[in-house]
Length: 412
Image (cartoon, rainbow, N blue to C red; front, side, top):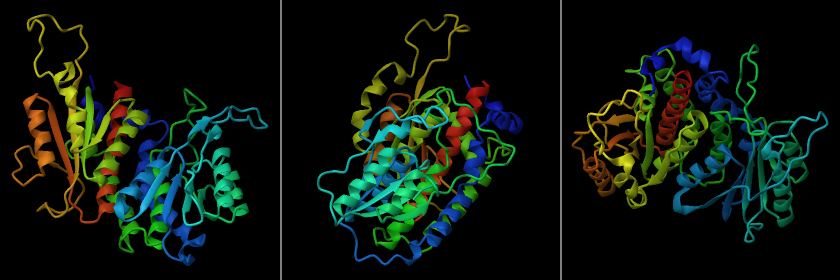
């Protein structure tokens, strides 16, 4: 069982946060500004596209693919955006030092057969050493695709981008204090991903989408995202008490549960999928994500099984001192509900159970299903009018919550 008092001990949280996850998330807003500035300096602001591409493919792994899924949600049905995951893996070659290469260095990608000169391929990598992405860039060049590559300057992928006449954009890394030392991972070839890497992938991708007319976002959408991330970092800072820190409060709610992350709409759906990945990566907790209304039928069996039971079917009077705390379901419903709040927009707000504002049929049915099986349902809604800003709200909150849950569980 999670000791909630650990969340209110900033010194203990700092000791447990060996890879500086909280610091990385606190600097996400600055990373958005830096990525936007460096993308413009690399030539993105001088780009003069000849119309919109037929399709945009976003290739990478980890947060790079999440960025592609977010762009697909923002573009909607008006444009075709296809995230392109790796399709194969081979043993990567060791470098001259004999160090064990990262597993991702041996991943492979393949362009769909229909891709051609009318399409745009965006490759994004935090490492820049994946030979599979270099090969993918060569495939796209041979087919006449337009190419944009986001990679660390000086990396093999950045060098390959110049050879295939791609637009190279720099990948912005986190600024860490000089005294920090890298943490040795339990699996050296499978290191943990920087929790704020998403914003280094997403910022140049969104800026490019605005330039080619893929989205209808306002011109100042990304600077506003940076401000929102800064505001969330202040609200969710380690020295903020749990009763005023929404991320700590959410982490405490999820402790000892199997989270079902339900979402209404594509924006909330992208945030729920991201949260499930971060819970696995940062807190070591499994979670199931899905979108309303189809998730109601997909997860229905969870409510009738042992996890959804509201009462203990065994002997009520038996001694439970030496028994582990039982796991129960916890439904977290994420929504984008623009214009439905009367209070100031200071981030996603937990919707009270007795809220009398109208809900969609799917959200109302979700509440009734949880209540019928004595399963706790917590709802968070962002009321910001812009989709990108609502997504930033939801992702920033849940990223902090996943890190806090992992740090507190490690101390427990």
